[in-house]
Amino acid sequence: MIDSFHYVYILTNKYKGVLYIGVTVNMSRRLYEHVTGMNPGFAHNYNCRHLVYYEQFEDIELAISREKQLKHWRREKEERLISSFDADWKFLNERFLPSKSLWQIKKHTNHNPPIL
Image 1 (cartoon, rainbow, N blue to C red):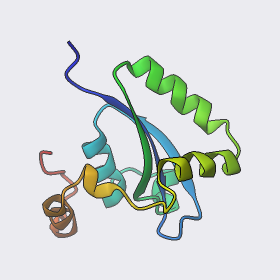
Image 2 (cartoon, rainbow, N blue to C red):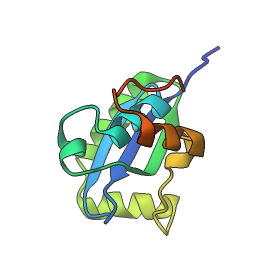
Image 3 (cartoon, rainbow, N blue to C red):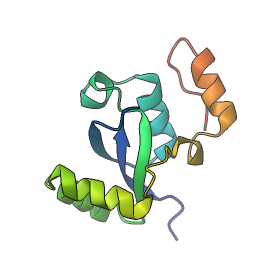
Image 4 (cartoon, helix red, strand yellow):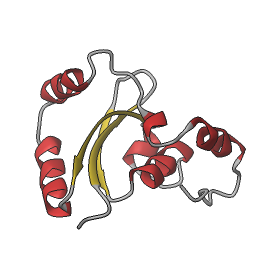
């Protein structure tokens, strides 16, 4: 029996102008890293901190394959996928980072994530 899930996810900035696609084995921790800007790179440079889409997989190989597929799509197709998931593109961070964790992120200064 598999205890954990693997995720393909899409983040955007607050203006919903940039999309970032990633894969992770721990969505809470990875989202925390994006929100706090812990890791340099594309998502950090373009302030992609808002979760707007995700898919859950039991098999990491399937998740990686799906991530690669989505990364080859045109922006319009990615937008249709997100809209089919949530037409309003609501930010979904609280599904993985409860309000208390968001408060801790704002107070946290040394970038060591709380245990989630």
